[in-house]
Image (tube, rainbow, N blue to C red; front, side, top):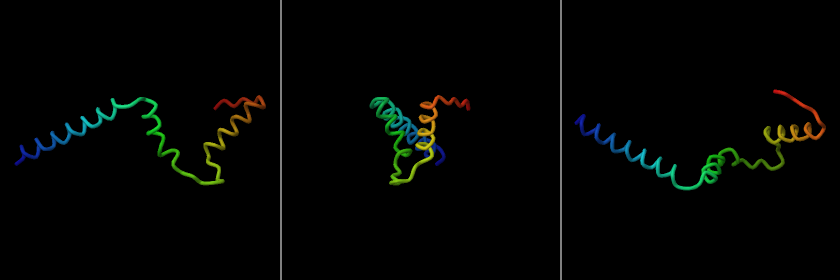
Length: 71
């Protein structure tokens, strides 16, 4: 019985590794980056400003004024 469970686990593990390799090798790096970004860009809050967009707006404004922030 232990051998049966062990062999079954090895088959499942081989299948999962095969699927991971298949997904990793099919497609381009651009599509993989776009798929990885989906959870970060799935919120539509309307007129609310996110923290990252506020930071990028502040950074671009300080660059246009010539301010320099190291940190």
